[in-house]
Structure formats: C-alpha cells, structure tokens
Length: 147
Image 1 (cartoon, rainbow, N blue to C red):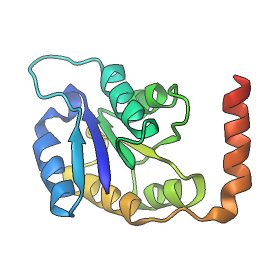
Image 2: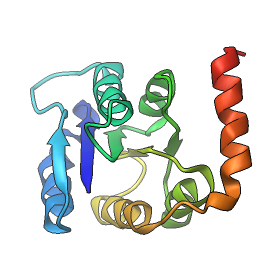
Image 3: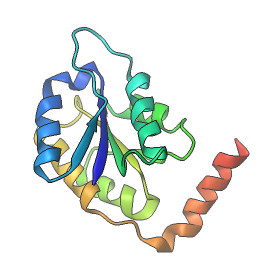
C-alpha cells in the first residue's frame, strides 16, 4: 500500500520513527512531512497529503500534528477526502470499516509513539465494509451540494 504521510512541528520528534514503522510494515510512504526547525503551518501538510490521496498518488493518508484536529479540518476541505481524527485503535479501525476514511489524523501530543503505531496498524489493517455504501453516498451528496 502507498501511504501519503504528513506532519507539522508538533510531530517532528517522532516523525522518523513513525516513517520507519510504516516502511517496516512493508508500505511505500510518500513523505510530505515537516522536518525543519520552528513552527510549521499544519494546513500546508494536510493539503499535500489530501491531494495525493484524491489524485490516486497514494492509497490513503496519515497526518500527525499536536491533536489531529487541525489537520483533520484542513484535509476534509479537499473534495473527496474523508479524514477522521483517531486517538485509539477502535476508532481507527471503525473509521476505515464504517466510514471508508481515506485519511486519518492523530495527535502526537495526545497519544504516545507506541499508541500512534498501534493506531496506524489498526487503520491500515481494517477493510471497508460495502454495506455502508448508502451512508458514504449520502456524505458525497452533502459534499457535492456544498451544504
């Protein structure tokens, strides 16, 4: 699987470890993350990851900021993205299984690095259940209508 990965300054310290973890699981990672010094604007990285996913350059996306909230809000502004904030493995799996989330956002200041890895694994290991297609279609209708 090809994963688009993005982070801001809040995840700079765990970034390399998380990238290595994803690669160690056998995934190809397209890295859009921030590695510099000083603050970084999370919408920039959320947009890069979201665009890579909707353009088919990646199968899914993973965003890491302080809480996951800002990244999620920004990513969800890109047409075709269904990004869920996840702070536990159950929510990560359900985001994929029930909502066909093509991006997740997590908070490096909310959970530790080992739980981040577990969340990634739960999300990546889950499969979307097509019985939820009608609900996903309803979400797409709302998106198209711009409501």
